[in-house]
Amino acid sequence: MTHIAVEGSCFVLSANQFCRQSDYHRYCVEEEEEEKDDAVVSPGGSVIVSPRGEIMEGPRYHGEYVLSTDLGMYVIIHFGNYLNDH
Image (cartoon, rainbow, N blue to C red):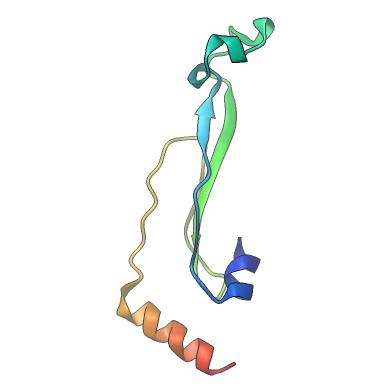
């Protein structure tokens, strides 16, 4: 995600799903995997990246999280100065 933020000169909010085997309906699960309800199917990995490629929050794995960060005027002004330097 950092390369997308740097190439696009933008903030990137990457929201990745976290889910367990038990989150799926039984008809979607193989019979031998039914007993593994706590097995992680998708570990997550959500992240917030600045236009300079700096990780501002995350990535978070193996749990349900809500990511947030304060962009604030300093970050916006700092980013504007960064763009003017190019």
